[in-house]
Image (cartoon, rainbow over all chains, first blue to last red; front, side, top):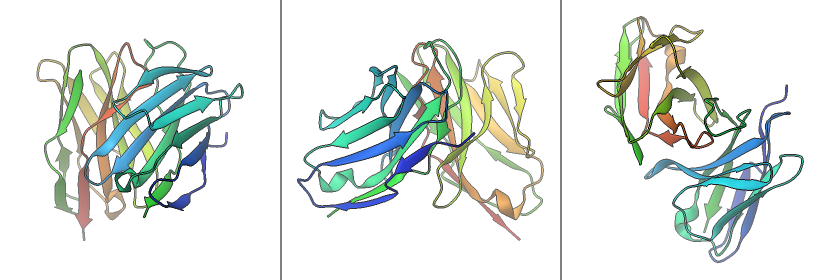
Length: 116
Length: 114
């Protein structure tokens, strides 16, 4: 099976702009989660989508949003970019269906966002 | 709420020496436990997981971890490391009631020297 793919791999944006990142999960996976990785804060959970619905949410401001399409592909949007949003954004997919299941997440290579 | 503490930010070790990367967690609910590895400029790869059953879990490349419920720990060990094991290692927990969410530790940078 093909792995998790993320596009674009690199982005440079200016403060105040908005950005949309895309993630295609492993075929058959319906759960997609997003994470932000920075040197200072480490890996932080943004949100999880399952069957086009946000199921879990981390502690990020409303500028960070996402959505999932019927084919399980997901997008993440960040509006009004700030310098502190510069990070590696990782997407992960899982075969989990109900929250009580223990399933590993498979990660994509990430999108490196630089805000200037 | 959950938190994960990796007790060492950097671990230098010589090739063929044993290594232990320590991980402790705190949670008000039961959790699943994972170790992920990240090689430079790459995404995260699952190394091993504890979901239930035997508290000692092993990976295909010689790593093992033991779940200790009383000490809320999930330390990662390898009896003999290789240069190729140089990477950053992340311990993570996933709450039983929030299966799509991983809470990560800050990571341990393992540096294997010849």
